[in-house]
Amino acid sequence: MRLDIRYRMFFAYDAAVREEHNEVRVRPREDAHQRLLAYRLTPVPAVRVLSFIDYWGTTVEHVGLVPDHQHFEIIAEAAVETRPVDPIDSAPLATLADDGFRQDQVEFLGVSNHVVWDEIVVGAARDAIAGTTEIAGAVDAVVQEVRRILTYEKGSTEIGIRLDELVEGGTGVCQDFTHLTLGMLRAVGIPARYISGYLFAADETQLDPDHSAPVTVQTHAWVEAAVPGQGWLAVDPTNDRPVGERHVVIGHGRDYDDVAPVRGIYLGEASPAVDATVEIRRMEPVDRASTERPRRRSGPWPVLSLPTADPLMIHQQQQQQQ
Image (tube, rainbow, N blue to C red; front, side):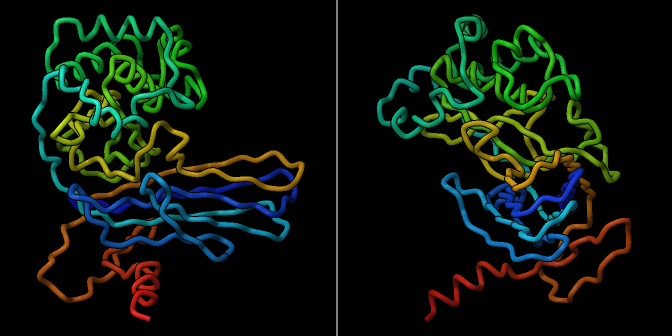
């Protein structure tokens, strides 16, 4: 599936600020599930963009604006070609006890900033997987329990809410479904990581297989659980649907903090207001055999309709050749 994605962040302040610096994590990654055809990040006003790969393998772009200002805009555009996610085999729950496996996945077994569980979460997780013998079955049982505990309600929570508060409140958004699923899985010894990305769906709680119209959404989150000897089992607890071609991965980490789309600081006494939106549309697949340069399409926003060289990659290749 060919998807064109436009992420717009608009920062507005009620008084002038200076020395604004932002870390942006919105560039889709390249892997067996998806191919990045084109990407560009455009700051307004124009400033230099510095790019690096963080510890988790996610592309981070640093964008800073030094002069006094009250507005700053960052637009990220990507063209991505996705493919179905290959299913993986399950494994017995007993294989999770392997010392080598646990050491390899130690970062996804412990607590993190937004994934700290208590006895209530542990008890719910243990009750959910009671009677299961396979990892895939246990993961599904945890997802079903999370969906029993939480009801999706847009705007009902903020980043930073504790897992026990989620359980007590009973409502949340995709990050909350993901964090609670991570907590319950890790509490019973199943390594699990937070996935940040985009979901091509008009409603992130329901995936309509026939949906093809452009959509305006926010970034999405889901879970991958480690299966010994097999790989990562991807599940989307928000909608309880398979992770597939409509999911575009940005990166992974222990929780939201490791892959937050934007994180920044500024100097000044002003109060900020940040408006972030994601627009996604489905496009015709790229003919890989054709060398003709496709034309741009007109629309409400520019569409990246052709693969472009990555300036950072070119720079790295030039350095290697010197």
